[in-house]
Image 1 (tube, rainbow, N blue to C red):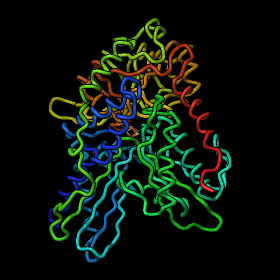
Image 2: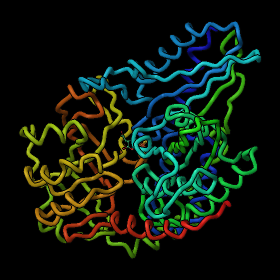
Image 3: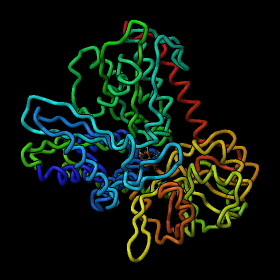
Length: 513
Ligand SMILES: O=C(O)C[C@H](O)C(=O)O
Ligand code: SF4
């Protein structure tokens, strides 16, 4: 097994940096179904471009490299203790090399272990099997889409679709509702794994296991195959679209599994995975640990390059869109002149800030002047060498988590723009109008695409919060994002949520009797 650790390292790098062929195929199909000149179409092009960049740079597709979760099948005589240690070594090495973000956080102190090792991380499930090879599968599922997982206990009364009973039709309603409640916050268009039955723990486990299926497989259970097909056909009628911008494609895959339950419980558990659906696997020679085979179609089999037609259509659409180029710090007048739908291209310095920083700023001063500043909800992957820090991956994080703080912080420090993804709520919207500020939506997961806009790291504060939570001061050039909440009380997110709830209502009538 002398090659085992190296093989696992290769699996980790491949999973984080090269989206598998079946996932790419689903994203390509979405690109074909979506009008390439719309906001959703443009976002899909950025996503496609980002997938190529990650493969080419051998760098993380998304900066949130998730909770590394392994499922390992071993021959009966394999030493699982040794394998576990090798897996942990491979994870620490991939983290040091900037292929994984430092993602293991002490839940009590907030301290980051810095190497992705800690109680509960990584997750490793071992199973024995009768075969002679070792099968190692890995999923890197990020926190933003993990937050959109949902578990239903039937019977239930669900917003939009009404009563959901303990039958296939009730399950159908749960799944439709699960897609609706995710909106764009889990970086739609997404994939869902559904677990029917079990208890609260095994139900979620079953849901997650579904994400190890191939996107293009067929469910062997006829009722579930029908259900999967129904969901794929109808979830896209919700109109949530890529990033929640509205559009024809909201869901890229739906896989449903079933297990027995207790008489008193009926759980439907849904695991939501963003478009950056990073999972791969390898079959290893049990004696040497060498890779014999990759278990999912490899990324390079499905190139994501834009066609000449797409590029032309987008250039034509670009001529009609309002693009505004602004240098930080912004003035009140500049941001009040922006409206939902405008594209803002930012030059100058911006500052990252996410959960720990927002909590801190509520009752502390800022280490830098934030008057007119742009705050980027982002926890980047950073690497340091002799020249200093470098941004390796830097897409937006889900903004709604900062809703309790954001409005007050905007007003306290005079911030003029907040960049993130998924939108924010009523309190922030009111603060944008009152103070004169905008919310800009960047494309979630496009971490390579945005990393290129950061030309220099000017400094960093709060390193004690850990790399993702620190406040990075980044010299920026040409960072493009869309105004989705403006200083005039308009919110694209509120509009899409309202419209999709109305559309969810069309799925109230029974389908599976
Ligand atoms: O933690 C992050 O960087 C992003 C997170 O996965 C999110 O989707 O909000
Ligand atoms: S930022 Fe988006 S793409 Fe990245 S892990 Fe979070 S949900 Fe997925």
